[in-house]
Image (cartoon, rainbow, N blue to C red; front, side, top):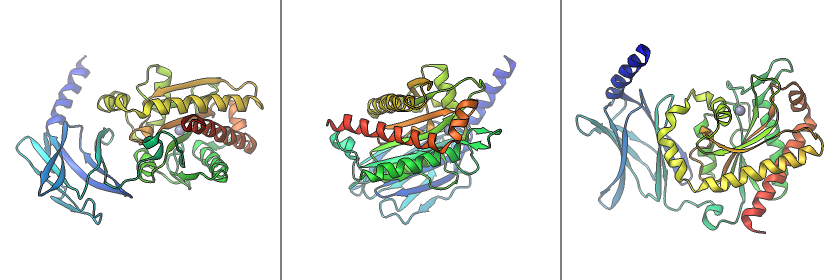
Length: 360
Ligand SMILES: [Zn+2]
């Protein structure tokens, strides 16, 4: 109780003296992501201002001081040449984004470190076809989880790391899809670290029509086994939350900090498509793998708050392929044939989902 009161006090103190630490821009064709890193979580508000026939976008950070950030950030991007940061009044710090054109924008918060992310879609952006017409899939983004300093889950005994296995499966899956004429984007092609928020940014920037994140599961219970698929949603059950918490770990985020984002997720019309894709991938994975491994356990397709799926413009799914903590499944994961079979089952699942959305 005392501890709780103390932390509340600290929380309140932090709330009123946050500083803005960094202003960064990541660029993709027709799309930009601005990341404001703060010292702590703050209330923020965004809006548009008309200025000499131009649209400016502002973000107000309440109870925030400029810290050591500059007052002007110039970029070589003709669509977003300048961001100005200044004190709006005693209570607010205002960042103004000078835009050449604006089709739509989206703002969300990411904790640890606290960040306010602004996605700006410029005019002329190619809208993903699935979104536009609800029928064509051309580009598929595959996201091999983890990488570099983040190895994901590991099996010490067999010297296996999640990051290597999922990259291997992604390579096989890419060649299968490319063989059918699909364009495939890999979020990483090497054993390199990639922050969660960069992964969907890459897929968005390249106009991918589908996003599939590949992971290997693990549990403290060595008997836990099976395959499960997830789409982004408020986790309803503790088990789904557990898996999400594990995959969210690289950024040290806690689920309780999700409040603001969740409202946006609920409104996201992509959820229905993502849910349908998760269900199809899961069904086909189980069906195909049971032909060789009759004991494969079906853990189902569920919604969970995965950070890596947030901010995706297209249907997005995360697949947890077997448990590295289960001795039998770890042995399978070591076997190149099992990896190839998983990749092939995923390939068939993706094809079935495309058939569903394209109505053939
Ligand atoms: Zn993982």
